[in-house]
Length: 265
Image (cartoon, rainbow, N blue to C red; front, top):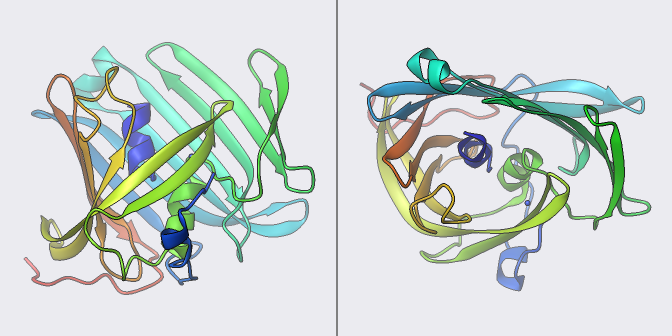
């Protein structure tokens, strides 16, 4: 469940772009405070989970910032077998998507974690605090580091995909759970995706995640993101070792730009 939510949020690792990708970085008005995205995750015939992403204004050290909150929980029969209540939060500045504080408060089938990370870019240090075990640690980072939630907004705001060609790769590193994880994502092309809102033109992307423990193989995940100024995930499909999980956008509000539909239904 944690991995699937991460994918939805772009996922949901420090930005270490190749030269060709770096040249495509710009700045776009892709989101604003007040945005909310809601998803339903289905495993086979089960409506297994609910996930949401909300963006609000907040304060960090008396400075106005954006606060991104992602919530994920199992529902219905899935909750009886495996209870999940996850909340991830990230605080970042308006002008540059750079994590200032990250919060992870989760319950996953008995596994509990409540941790906070503060980022100091003067010393390039992440200050990690496990609030349950009362453990504090420091980790060296670099100025382009992202966390699991801020990555989603960084790509939406700064990355220009207009000149990407099929099979081009985007390279990312993310600081998560006391480690920096390398991550890459491949641009596969443009699709027209049928949704509850109508037909939507989307970019099809493939994130490369760790295989073996959860996923069927290293290419078992595909993400469809709107090919417009908003760049929001419409659909995620993950092939697992047993079956597959599909996440679909079911509601949205507060978008920064019009939501483009090819054919309304």
